Image (cartoon, rainbow, N blue to C red; front, side, top):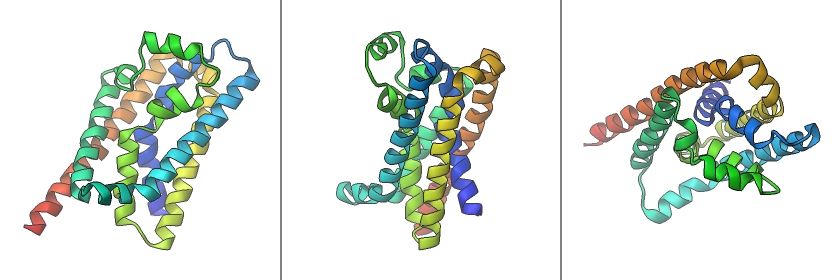
Length: 207
């Protein structure tokens, strides 16, 4: 249970679905409720598939390129901490590759679930590297099952948040969403720094 809670909290902080609410509202402002529900569902499904594939296959990618787990954790920690810093400074959209030009291009597409919502807004390098490193340390059957449930739970939360995004935007307002994003950003920075510290200590012990 502790493993489930830890991974769920870590993924939620890195993915930050609350911070995606304003973007989702802007991209789906001309959609009806049924269309918004469909986009929310497929975004959650896409994120789940991306994360679960990264969780199980990521280690083989590391082996193929000869990347050590400590190198991955340090680089992942930097990415995660950087993402948290952008949340604290209100630059989330820009850092995730969303700008006015891309928003206009997206509005002309039939489906926005996979991109830009699932990638790069939600499932990005930070969450992927986190899962790859996490799998390296938790390979027992019980740990893997708990991890899969945590990923699935995060996907459900993403669906619920996006499904109610228009209501959340009205209820929380711009200042409320910014406040929550900055709190999540602080936690995300802490997770990234912890990954870096753990890797450095592991390297020192191996010397």
